[in-house]
Length: 437
Image (cartoon, rainbow, N blue to C red; front, top):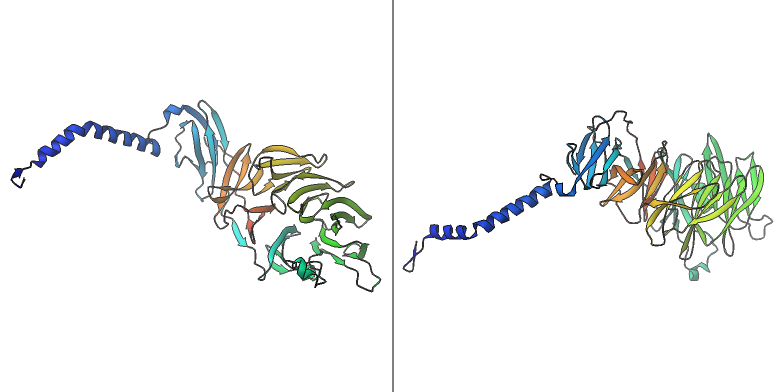
């Protein structure tokens, strides 16, 4: 090629460039190839040293490590080990191995897609106040907050208006009796027997004192009380927990059909959550006094004894789980890191277990702890295997909000975030029997 009288030989120019730089180009291509091979797993990280992994799973499960079929070889480092069944069920765990270490994993079959239902919203202007389990359904209570102190002087109301529904497998039912008493009543049906308890305040000029009326305990029972803020039946309907307002806070009393009311504990501030032990012999109570929040456990039989066991960071009950003779819960340590704690119902003394950020938890029949946690921006249900979390399913329809918290009852999980709530029905898969290595 001739340009302005000058002859330019492009072939010779290209040859000179390649000749001068070909070693650098070759080294660059080689380095890129090595990095690509390591990143893709084609080149194993042999410099970390070998480890040994033994996996027990369903025989038809497809085992993968870091997204690739597992050949039996594994090197030290952090890996994602998963077992996927042909029907789509899956379980997985993030596992960190050291060089020369031998690790054994039992990967369950996972859970099928769970049924997720959104709890119906309340009327405009109402906020979600509390959710608790009663009988065969969940009680969801919304309230209209009381007016400010300046406005309250012009009203005689001492309790906010409520909208309470029973939400469960049978559908939605409005509990008008509870709302008629502004939340200071309870209704429970056990084995076809209906129990009702209502707080009836004294009327100006009348002779009747403040009282709680109970229907279902051999007819009608009345108990003189002070200003009541909470009425809650035990799971079997044969006991009642009352909270009475005092100058300092709330006074908790325990009532049964065959004995006079018994004082349980006095709590400063106001109650924000209550959860009965399935037997009805113990109860968890969350309360708040200004910015301070406390969690109290009370053993009600044979003689009521109560102890403060935690200082949660948010209103309401923290994640908890009952067993026959103990309670477990999540609460932060002095550094604000979520931890798992336990207390025997005999001693009521908190004992630290491990670091754990669970949003809900329950005990399975084999005593395994199943939890809900947030993982990689998703809400995940899984179980603990020692200190390992094994994921079993994810809930794509529930947002992974920072304030997400929940409560478990049998195969039903109730999750709440802000003014929203979801009911999730968990269906267990078939247990595996054989081993796949």
